[in-house]
Image (cartoon, rainbow, N blue to C red; front, side):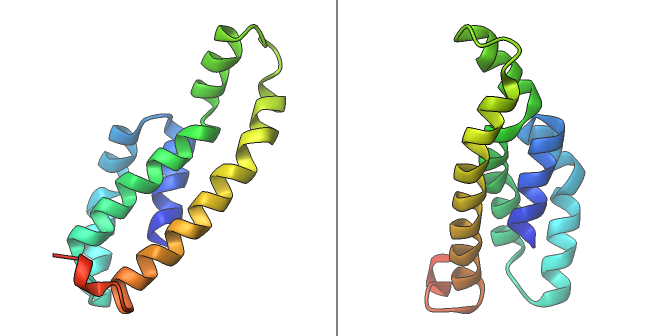
Length: 108
């Protein structure tokens, strides 16, 4: 759930900093309750936000204007959403393995 919250925060606000301000404390508090490293979930919130940048309306509008596709933001969204969602799914599995599985040695 942590990566999805970070992804959604940046997709909605367009800013990783804003999403961290909105959800960072929630992620750390949730980590304490479920027995997972707060460092892992705080980092997860920020890193998943990078994947949310791919589908952020602000970024899509800017890219469309730069490459001469103004008014075709929907086309860009349809092309980038599968990549963003796929990377988010892979990242979610990685975070799970770092929290509970064989990759837990990677978390300080």
